Image (tube, rainbow, N blue to C red; front, side):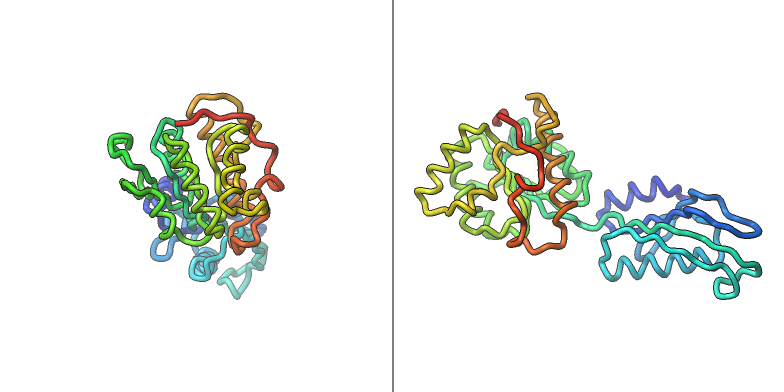
Amino acid sequence: MHNWINALADLQRQGEPCVLVTLIEEQGSTPRNAGSKMVISATQTFDTIGGGHLEYKAMQIARDMLANGKQAPDLQRFSLGASLGQCCGGVAVLLFEPMGQVQAQIAVFGAGHVARALVPLLAGLPCRIRWIDEREQEFPALIPAGVQKIVTDEPVDEIKGLPAGCYCIVMTHNHALDLELSAALLTRNDFGYFGLIGSRTKRMKFEHRLRARGISAPHLQRMRCPMGLSEVKGKLPIEIAISIAGEIIATYNAHFGQPSASVEPIKQLLPSSRRSQATN
């Protein structure tokens, strides 16, 4: 039988949503093993919580959750008896945890050192990623599953094709290009998150230039620069990448499903950002 852990990993790699069902407790004449788990996708089941009508009911509930796109975990209590084909009474408690639903569409502009550390981290999350750069040679030979590599001479042109609510990360090798990307994103202003790699000094310079282009102060407040969680220290690409990935997770956990126009400035949600960051 396919182990639930392997099944969960396989479905994650395939980008297929599923529900992890855990037997929290059962009280009855012949209780099952608490902690038993099974994974349920739209068409398959993996492992078991003990079979019988309770498991069949769990499969129905899990597939209803998938069909309705439910994101939140659900703890349900079942009375065991005739309705579930049990000869004796009792109670069972099951936890339903949706997995693999796409939480964010992400666009990463730049394929330098930090981006090459960041994208594999993001690819392990329930996200879909566009990875954009002018330089074919900067991309690794192996692109992670769920990542679309885009090589283009005009990265700014890619912004118009991004979905509303997209998470946008700007970390190119060129400050002038960073500025043009920032201006285009802030003008559109329907992103879910916008992070710009760099120091506070870079932010001050960019704010001055962007204001000169007519970008309003409320729009500028939505730009996260420096980006990343301040608790994660260090200047190595992987350290910076981990701090940025942590910020992405914190943001989509807090705001997934909300209209992007109502998303509060990230600084109200997260601790103060890093003082400076290496650029690619």
